[in-house]
Length: 436
Image (cartoon, rainbow, N blue to C red; front, top):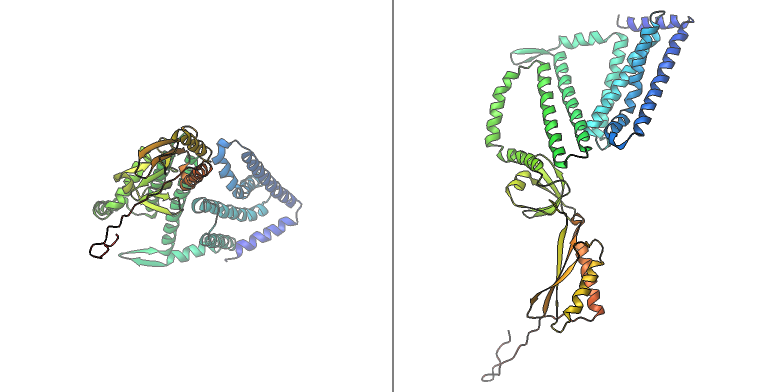
């Protein structure tokens, strides 16, 4: 009984093979395959040559290209079966339809999973194993469909009843509920990833608002997915009121810091006090902002080390932002020259040497000042601006000092150093006092 459907299909296909009308089925299949391949190719080429403003559509169709061919094949096979079925049998198309449909389902699921969990294009070992397992289950389902064992399998799963509390649930219901929950959450994550990619390509929106909308969209989509999946499973949503009250109490007492960090994250993103790429200093941490998440912000220091800063600290503590309205940063270096130095001559030379150093801004230009009449000599300060503090200040400061040292060497400028005169007292009763 289990193999009658498959045997009957093969027998009918063999009977069609002996008839001349079978060539119409073969021709229909060939035409469907050629049309699907050609249309998929045209779509890929048209979007690959599109304008830059259509970047999201270009990325979506390019990554969706592996799904296009089997999906179009399915559509054309359905159309061909509907047209050709008015005049003759279409057993060949009936045999190919579930095979091509299964291939389309596998590639579509792979597309969604990779767009959700492998945005950078790298597929991890766990994801690769999952894809192989899913593909194997789909092909097993195709075999069960052809052999007629699929209804028997569903009936067997429905007969297995598991006692859960006072209720009894069949294994089939548990599998259906698990699949619906996983499916809705994965679709929500995929939709949030597509929304984030679309927002990040908007040219006229601030980067902070892009992050805010993407985070809020992800949270709302996941919440909707959970509520829909619970409804599909059959759980009454009114029972969540007790859980919501307990969750509110827990957030109010046990999760104050975490809640504060999440709220602070949205405040930072909305008030635009800092953006990705800004150079900031908070507490003892300084560096460039590389990530702004809802709970924490990542700073990358000049030495490459990354610091994870809770957003609560960025809201409650003073933050020095070097890039809020102007990315330019002033850097200074000090030196002491002797009192015999001709300042009218040496100060322009110091400025000229500093201006020739790479990365030094010319507007405003470097400047040299007499800061103080020191005990050892004249204290000078050379100040200059750099427009790219994210590339570090130590290297440009070193280059400026080397340029100033070359000026000092070329013009034989005296750099005094502290000198102390020690006078020894006369011996008293033959005893020389100690020298400190």
